[in-house]
Length: 344
Image 1 (tube, rainbow, N blue to C red):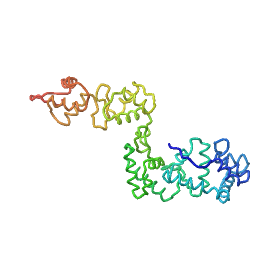
Image 2: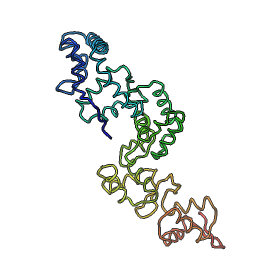
Image 3: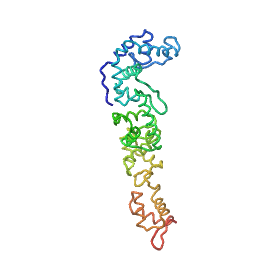
Image 4: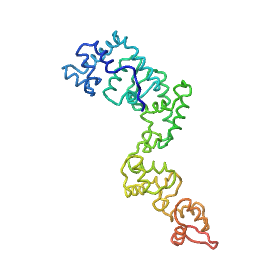
């Protein structure tokens, strides 16, 4: 994440703003926003206990202090600071998740607290609290914020439960939803920041996007990791390679034997050869070679030995002889006068 460089020192600015308050009010604001030597923020209750006042009284002092700072001569003198911050928020997309916004200024939580306090004081900045759909976010243009949130809702509704979309495709879909926006916002990095506002859309460690509730996005166990690995590979892959890729992509220790056991148990995977697994969604038939032959004959009726071999080899990575040995099993298959095989 690219760091934003500002022309002022945030701690010096907040110190000037706090200077207009009485000592107790200063202490309340410093404690509430983590502006002191410790970056931790105190709750209304904790501050109330310190001064032996109610949490509601603390809230009143906080609100009155913010109003006092906003009306002060010092605040007016510092107007260039708020103008600079507004320009930065607009450059970042006009609406940004709080976490992303503060990280652009510093990784240091203490410094982030000072910037957050400046956003609270600046009357151009509006904070919307986290809800089921979106994270805590700041904006400087209400109409733009509504458009972005509406577009994110539409984008989510178009995704099916377990669908995965490549980042470029999702960005294009999002831009389709906001065609009438100013061209300056139609930037890949800006769109990624907008996507990051959503609680309901997220991306997996392989950079594919989908519904945050999907195991394909928020993978929770070895089977989910294996699914994503095989899907990314795009063709049947040996379970040893699956285990290696899980360790590589997800930084999770994947034991070969454990990975194999998990693949066997899950209907999303089909064993298509010696240790080779494919995804059932690719259309591979489940079962051992005998079961595959039975399903082919059920579907297509009596077939010649050559035709059966051809069809089975599309489903399984096995030797031709393995198929022929299975066909000789008279408990399951019979041969007619024309040399065609069918199920018993």
